[in-house]
Image (tube, rainbow, N blue to C red):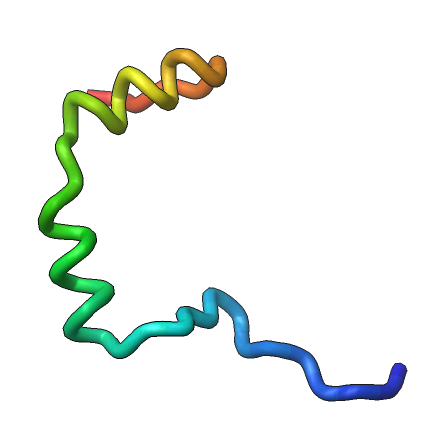
Length: 43
């Protein structure tokens, strides 16, 4: 295999920006989207 791979879970943003975006996530919206896709969240 040739070529360089990206690191697993590589983000094109700094950790502060990633954390800020994560904290803005609405848990209810995330749950609705996952249920719509057929995934589920355990309580």
